[in-house]
Amino acid sequence: AHDNRHMSREFCLEAANTLAACGIKAYIFDSLRTTPELSFAVRKLHTIAGIVITASHNPPEYNGYKVYWEDGAQVMPEIASAITAEVNAITDYSTIPTIKDEQKDLVVMLDDKQDTAFIEAVKTQVIKTELVKKVGKEFKIVYTPLCGTGNVPVTRALAEVGFENVIVVPEEQNPDPNFAGIEYPNPEEKAVFEIAINMAKESGADIILGTDPDCDRVGVVVKNNEGEYVVLNGNQVGSLLVDYVISNNKEKISNVVNPTIVKTIVTSELGAKIAKENGVDCIDTLTGFKFIGEKINEFEQNKDRTFVMGYEESYGYLVGTHARDKDGVVSSLLICEMAAYYYDKGMTLYEGLQEVYKKYGYYKEELKSITLKGIDGMKQIQNIMNSFRTSDIASIADIKVSEIRDYKKGINDLPKSDVLKFVLEDGSWIAVRPSGTEPKIKFYFGCNGDNQEIVDEKLDRIIEDITNRVNK
Image (tube, rainbow, N blue to C red; front, side, top):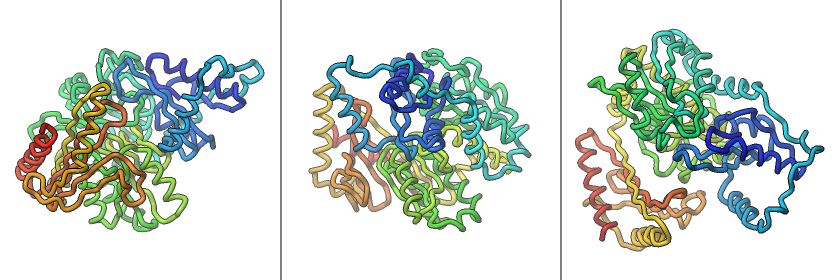
């Protein structure tokens, strides 16, 4: 599969033809498709692997090559390393086989049956079908696919379950490799919603959705108590979904083996608290949705747990097991259903979030990144990691450190990874890790307390303490 970026179609065809030249049958979509549909298709078509040409939410000049394994999840580090080693072993490109006429039948073009199968699988995750039909005519949605792959599947899924009032941002509805001038097509950034927010103000929309170019992440904008449109972060949306999915699926969840939520080690603890207080387990994986996908496969093989939902703070969510990666299509559908549920109660999604805070406590998270480019930057990043790893840190912002988790040594059954996490005695936490894709070192902070004022003050003190340690 491929997205709408420069040369994506050409790279996709080249990959399929090269596989065919090696005697390997390759299915290929007839035009651009979302990343979650590729994940779904790998298992639906019983293939050994899948390739999607995409650079996700990166700027227009980027492109990339994602590989999925037969379980439908992105390849794990050891397989990725083996593939990279094979690529690097090629010293003469002329030795790579090229497709012959008699091999062209090995490239099989997929038709829209595959799309329908994917959408039908997504639709099975709707919890309150009658509610959606009841309010679907009046509940107003503004949606932007950010010139990517999401427009067709997201609007189709919404329409087929009963959401009739969906307005797509005209300037951003068609696939465009330059993203209509959007410099950074990432739904984590409020700037990408500028046109959508103006449209929402004019139409009185109840919710704004935005999917990134390969439609695996979703950004959500809602009205706050002052009537202003504000962007909810990934931790907030993820926690809302955990609460909604568990609260409205109690009978189903009570009849499965060990129902489990899966999140990453740098994701808010609010979702974990909601799950546990409702009799649902929550386990952590390393950063990256491939590790959540791995857990789904593990649960199915061992039959000791049932996957309920997986999510990460970077705007990726999955309900259901039709895909083994974050899915912007099913997420868009369930976020709209959840917002419609609150709408039917005379509430906004923002008010729903405040209700969750009132019940489980106020939680807030921050991410601070430091960019350090080049070889010297890499050394600085490693020096910072070493400093935090070797310093005897007994307290942070005068709060006692109760536990230090060094994932490089291996924690529980997780793969070893260059991540440190400091857990404080009041439940606050700090995680630090080098970025896997950018020249950055990332600091994640999480705090909780009785109200926003207490948490804001505590979070500021913790961030200041860590910043001072980095700048020493």
